[in-house]
Image (cartoon, rainbow, N blue to C red; front, side):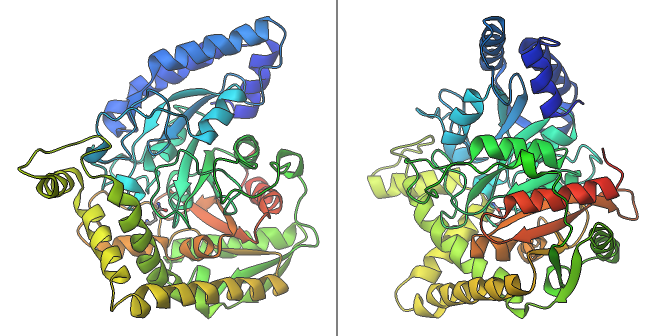
Length: 474
Ligand code: GLN
């Protein structure tokens, strides 16, 4: 499939039309969606209308936008007017959002063509897309394996060449880990860079929306389009979107890159080997490699599994059978709430609500939630010290390549460990991305992770581009 940059340029020049690009995306979706379960809803009618409007803009000689005619897939926790949005949960089955997420407004304004909503772990809680109420998504590169999660549908859409780009959300790794499993670039932007308005909340202090694409340039382009201040999100950074595409070829000469032991130790040998090879490639491109140890990163997973469930237990209180989606009738209101939530939420979501409610309850708050917040502060300090030694950090994205369906679904702790390398960045609010680098023993892609301080996206994309070139990608 052509890159998003190429498609947009061909649509603007009239070499192709948005409608033709939309039609070929639709054909690719139809060819494999039954097998892979990537899209929960394909918005054929909406896509045709948007594509025709883009073509009319081109015909009138107007600027059709940075993403003119580029088909895009949207994770099903992004609200889109009149389009079924479930967050992978039965409790939201049939719900039609009355407004668009800011990111959707922005991709539409840039001329992109939303093709539909992609499968995900229920309320983004998971690392394999197996906790979706609508069945698992399969990895297009090997359908016996998971695509990762929670944004597994959005990753699979791009890996299966259904759309050249997609949007996901990352609370503890849900963009970077599926990007690694599907051989894509996936970005967790600096907290506040991208508006969360219209993103169905999981853990609000950690959630960020970000792009998936086949290469660093396309990912940078999509992030440029969705980033920048939004008055509708009180945590949105007060500045316009940074220029990213113009820095993709900046290289890494003179940059100090810290290889952080805690960001790859315990990973499978085939993953560690690629991290080491990536460090060598960055050194060859002129970076200085420093070996670092940041022991605080080991505390990330435990702190995350108190903070994220605590926030989730509060965010998910709104699904009460009154305001959204499912209602299971019962004799009084309390019984109706209980019956609705019992029927509407899956096992993982219930586990998180119970964990979070417990961690926040009187008598346990200081010992659990309060303690986790202290660890979070330590984590932020640890990153700050690391950034005195290095401009960017390098590690693995996930401990393994894509695992087989069912391998971890009955063992929550094994599943949680999938995100051990990605979670520290969410806790600190920093920027990070995963870029494919080499393959493991079975030929499946390995993702390496680049991490940087807040607002370091331009440097991260430049380093990712160096690795792409070293790995023989164009
Ligand atoms: N896998 C992690 C979790 O289950 C992270 C999910 C995410 O980033 N949305 O919480």
